[in-house]
Image (cartoon, rainbow, N blue to C red; front, side, top):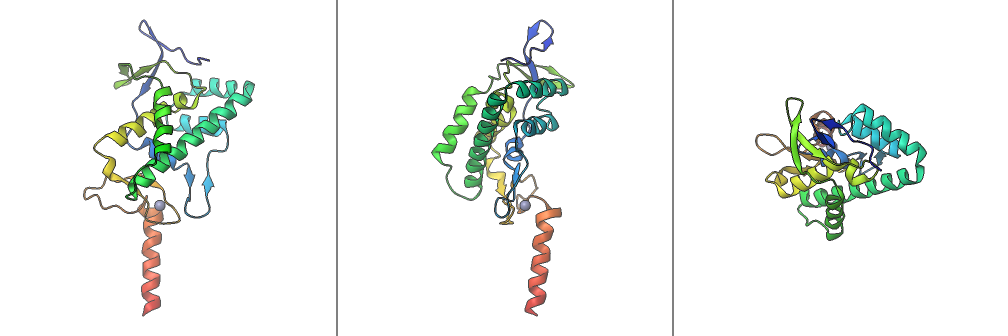
Amino acid sequence: MKLVAAKNDDQTGALIAGPRLGLCLDFANTLAGRGSLRVESLHSFSDMAGWCRAGDLLSQAESERLLNWSRTNPVEAVSAFTEAIDLREAIYGIFGHLASGRDAEEAHLNRLNRALKEAPARGAVARIDAGFGWRIERDQTIAPSLLAPVVWSAGDLLTGKHLGRVRLCANHQCLWLFYDDSLRGKRRWCSMQACGNRAKTQRHYLRRKAQ
Ligand SMILES: [Zn+2]
């Protein structure tokens, strides 16, 4: 089912911005605290649509249409949601393994490749806002299409020159993935405010205890 047929000039299809670097890592991090008490932020198809809307992967109108569709097609919506979570875990698996010096598992790579194949082709560029985006034919009721920028981002990050900057947070309770954009490339924590400060406080505590 095609939910979008936006018109621009004389061409049909949706216009979507290219993925920013690390978008796939943000998606993988929707399950937080992987090393301790896991905190899931995606419990349903509507949560997933909400995440896509918040990240500008969907317009407001697209999001509303999609939520209406999910209400009238609950079985298909659950299936798309399950597929999205499966894809998320494969993405986390690939980058988590690579960031910790291990090789990516074939099963995870195959899962990503299936999504890349099912995601809409980036066939044409077109003007969008002040820059350019991709014109795609998009069926948002299937996960690889709804999450197309996430899927592209995973493929681009994996094959591009920035792969060596993907890190796992050094806080073993957190284990968030992040892209290290620091000058020296020595960042250890997903965020200094959260995990970095916790580590500093812990070191301080241990030093005082040893005195
Ligand atoms: Zn962290």
